[in-house]
Amino acid sequence: MHTIALPRQTIKFSYDIGAGENLLNILVDQQIFIESPCGGRGSCGKCKIKHLGGDLPPLSADEEERLTPKEIADGIRLACLIYPTGDLEIDIVDQEENHQVLTGGYVPEYEPNPAIRKETIEIIKPTLEDQTPYELLLATALGMDQLPWDVLRQITMGEGTYTGVFNQDQLIGIEKGDTRERLYGVAVDIGTTTVVAALIDLRTGAEIDSEAAINAQKNYGQDVLTRITYVLEHGKEGRNQLQTAIVDSLNEMLNTMCERQQISPSLIYEIAIAANCTMMHMVLGVDPLSIGKAPYAPIFVGAKDVKARDVGLTALSSFGRVYCLPAVSSYIGADIVAGAYVAGLHNRKDKVLFIDIGTNGEIVLSDGEKLVSCSCAAGPALEGMNISCGMRAADGAIEEVRFDNEQGFALKVIGNIAPLGLCGSGIMAAIRELLKHEFITARGNIVKPEELEAGDPRLSYLDLDGKKRRIRIGEGPHKILITQGDVRQVQLAKSAILSGFVALVKAMDLSFSDLDEVIVAGQFGAHLSVESLVGTDILPQAVRDKITYIGNSSKTGAYLALMSLETRREMIKLARDFSYLELSVTKGYERLFAECSQFKV
Image 1 (cartoon, rainbow, N blue to C red):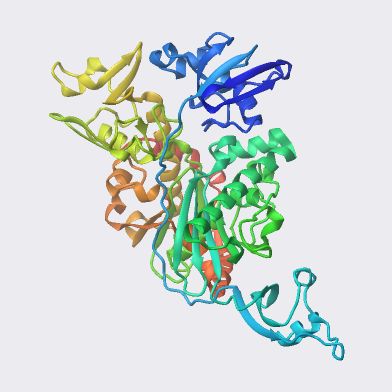
Image 2 (tube, rainbow, N blue to C red):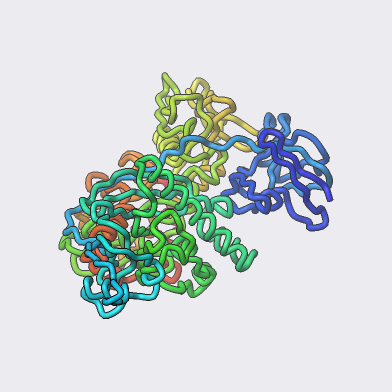
C-alpha cells in the first residue's frame, strides 16, 4: 500500500497500486472532488492538480496538448491521465468561487391553493369512565373514520389543542398546539449545472429566502450522458452516489435557509421539484440507464408525490412530502413543462417559440393549437466548459467582450478582478466580436496571419502555437486565448440549437416571420444578450426584435406547483398535450445540421 497526501487540506490516505485506477478515480473514492466536465475521459483538461512530491509517470502527450508550458513548468498535471506508482503529495488547483446563479424569473398570476394545509382540533383527555381511544377522538374531530398508520406512530397524546397536517385530503401528520401560522414549503429547480431552492410561506406565497449552488453531481460528469455513463460503469453504487450527491446538497441548502431565517426545518412540509428527466430519476434513486440508449424510453415521466424521507431528504418535517412535476420524454423534462406553463403556452393563440438554452437546448413551438417540442444536445461549451480558458460564471470569469481597432479588447469581469477565464456568456460575446471583426470566417476558421495586410490591427492579437492559430483577447494570471477548438465547440453547440429551431418551424409549416414571440428561459439564456444570440447565429436574425426573457422558469414552475393544485392539474394536462420531434430521425436533419454550422458574417 502507498499513500497520497494533500498537505493544504490536511488529508492523507492509503491506496492500492494494484487496483490500476487513475488519480481522479482514487480521489473520488475518497470523496475528494476536482472539476472533471468530461467525466474523466481526458478530453476537457480541467482536472488539474499540482505535483508537490513523490513519483509520477512522465507527462503524457495528451497532457502536453492540454496544459500550457507555464502550467507544465509549475508542476500542473491532469488527474484523469495519471496512474500513480508510489507515495504521492499533491495539491488541488483552486476552483472558481462565488458562482453566479440565476434564482428569479417572471411569475404569472395563479389561484393560491397549496396541497399542504392545516386544521386545528381540541382534545379532551380520556377518563377512567370514558376510555375512548385517542385515534377515535382525533379521527372524529377531523371527520375521519380512522387515522393512517404513519400518523398513529406520531401520536404521544394528552388533552389540549392539536393541528392536523393534510396533503390535499390525506392526513399526514399531527402536531401539538396550534401551528397554523407556521406552514412552509420549498420550490426547487435541479439543473444539470446548478440547483436553486426557494423557501416559501405557503400561507401567503411569499418567497422568504433562496439558496443556489452548483449541482454536486458535477463531480461525476458535467452533462447527463456522462453521469448516466458513470452509473453504467459503477452500477447500483454509482446510482446511489449520484442520488446522495444531490440529496445531501438539497438538505444542506434547506438547513442553510432555515438557519438564516431562524425557522425549524420541521415546519417545512413539502418540496416541489422541477428538473430534467435524468435529474428527476437520479434524485428519486430511479435507474436512468434507459434514458441514455435507444429507444431512450425513461422509467417514468408522470408527476410523483412521495415521502421525503424515502429519498433521503431529511431537512424538513418527518412526514414531509416531495412533489415532482411531470415530464414529456427523456429529453423534454419537467423543467421544460414548467417553463412552457410559465410562458403561458397552454393558453396562447398566437405563434410562440420557447427555448431553454443550456447543456441541452430544449425548444417548444406553439401555433395556438398544437405544441411540438425537440431537444438539442448543445453540450457544455455554452456554459464555459470544454473551452480551453472556460470556467463557470464565478469571480474572475469574463462575461462580456468588446473589440474595436483602436482600443482592442475590452473585458467585463465578474468580481472586477483580473480575468481567469471565460464563462458561457463570455465565450459567446467573444465569438460574436471575433465574427463581427472577421477574426473568424463563416466556416469558423481563425484567419491566417499571412492573409492580413501589414499594419492590420488584428495581427497583434493572433497567437501562434506552432501551426495552431489562437486569438489572445486578454491578460490575467495567464493569457486568455480563443483556440480553433474553442470555436468548433461553439459551432457545434450553435448548430445543434439552430437546427432544432429550424426543424421545428418547418415541422409546423411556418416561417421565422410567422413567429410572434421567441421566449428565452434558463440560467444561461438569461445572461445572453439579444446581440450575442443573433450575433453568433444561435438564433436567426429574423427574430431579433421578437426575443423576450422570463428567467428561471423552471423554479417558477416549481413554485406554482407548490402553491396551486390547479396549476398541478394544468401542468399534467400540458405535458400530455406535447408532441415530440426526434431530430435524429427527421428527414434531411444531418444536412440541416451541417448547414447550421456555418456562421452568418
